[in-house]
Length: 466
Image (cartoon, rainbow, N blue to C red; front, side, top):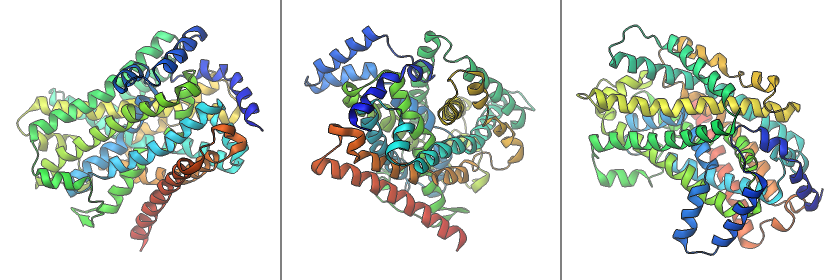
């Protein structure tokens, strides 16, 4: 297939743009006006250009809403609780790896307009394409387990603070399930609901950052020099308080960018009608909508727990619960505990609905089901058995996210390799193939990101089974 064929394929995306529930695309006239406006500001002063980009951003925030879930929360909580400031580097590094890969995916998708699964199948090989899609499906199901564990624990703890006794996490999981299914089935039926949901996700993402900023403001910083060193130490500590440092590091790297995010992201770009003219906007969106809020939220959580739980003699390693963390941070303030628990709950609830969306959409790509059909909607239910997680793992409601994040991280390297191959495939990208030193550095960065993840996973497996 030539680049011209790939461009022609972009003419057949109406079903994707109309059906993908991640966005409501503008009508053709609005889209054309948007493209002209983007061309007009391309060489404008930086402040003016970025101000315009900020009004159009969106897919990056959707990725933040997905990745700021139980995996990120647990990795950050245990990093600060067990190792203080020394693992502050993990979340930003993990997300920088993700930005490199997702930036490449955005360039490919917006340059060609091709549906990414089909592009991977034709130009990188069917085995890699199917491994990517099935990995995204399986990861969404596995990662759903700790979402329900953490969400139900937060609801139970909030009920306790409100003076409501007997709210067992198992029953709270049922409430979360009803909410998630309702959102999953109702969302996307009208453009108004789509726009409202996307705005809500933005509010949730920044609300999480504000919640943990309040926590850090109240707890203070123990040692500014030690804190600064934690972002650049790249230390992998040994065992402390019954927790292996390598487990927290690998979980944090894997939770930053999941394979289900990698699958859904390019389709969320197509759903908005974005094209070649939006490539600079997409890079800005990844930085401001995904990297910045994620790094802020996770870093603030690590700092807050390092300032409090790390010094708490009652810290129970893998049995750490949200209420214990909240109590350590705010021993004399119920309001502070509520702020913390609401922040964690906001992270998890947004991720649950996006995991369900991923399952439905992956199945629609694999089996040719129409997005929004009954088969599609039933596929969104695939991860819902996770509602039993609070009952099956009552003593590891937070820790469960660590091993599940590591398991899901095993799926990522193949997807990264596939997109690295696509990035140098001239039959696919044509004149948009990155060339020269810039192109080599970009592909090298993707392979370096893949190698870092593989090495981290290998170190974990060696430590686990040696």
